[in-house]
Amino acid sequence: MIWQDIIITIANIMFSYALIPQILKGFKEKKGHLAFQTALLTTIGLYASCIAFISLELFFSGIICSINGTLWLILLIQKMIYR
Image (cartoon, rainbow, N blue to C red; front, side):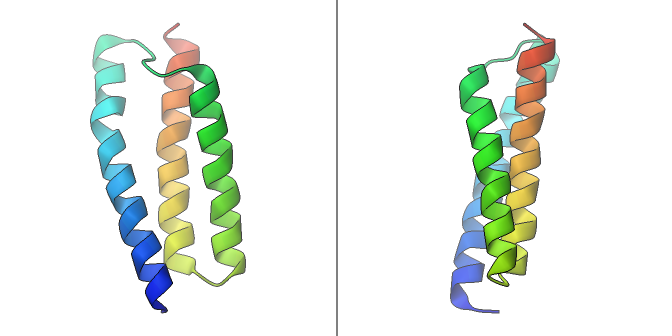
């Protein structure tokens, strides 16, 4: 494991942790609080980054980035369902 993998993994863990209250708020209030375009582009960007990390053999970063992308996907789905 190289140091860049550790730094990217830690940053993505913090980003993922920060999204949990937003997701729970969306389920509780039955509202999509984010703009559709923001959630869509962030989801696509995170999944693309995940592929890039894995291709660079930054496996921990790729896995955690995919979790972060999935959390953004949940926010996107909330926006679509709870209009």
